[in-house]
Image (cartoon, rainbow, N blue to C red; front, side, top):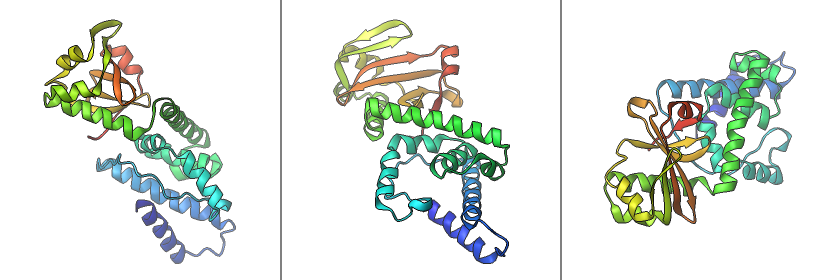
Length: 257
């Protein structure tokens, strides 16, 4: 719906503007709609109205591929759920630079004035965003779909907070391992469930280097990261990371509950 609003705003601006001197109408419209989108993203960020709900796109069309079913199918297949989630975590300028260059083939000298940066900086924005998106896609391919991973993490945190021992046992592999740094703290579902039952009350789901996990971040400052490994719908290992240097090196994004 927000994308539809941006396109409508672009149409209204077109209807009100004198475009007699515009030689590249496609480029003009791309610039206008991109700026509307950028303004909206920045406004959302300032209001702290972050939405990380994932909706699979019905179709994607751009440029000369518009109304081409095969092109739409290829684009839809390339936009995994993990990619959509990571797009939501990018800074507005990163997101716009990445989408305009990698999905619409717009050169950086045209992207630069849209995001208010130099072409070199726009290239860096897109490159940084691309690394995070590619990391998310690689993770999705290796460890399963985002929705399934998120369901496991949410269920674990809820069972832990509420002290639901049996629910924790159901989520844990019988041979699950809990590590604190390089030390094994507990092994087996019963021992690990006892460790977490009634705890993790302040923990929140998070993307950790593009992988779903959790973080304990009182006052918004990450103190401990919970890195999960899952297989066949159960958690096979949990790594607790609390070392300040290791935490600082992680690409960490706290998600909404």
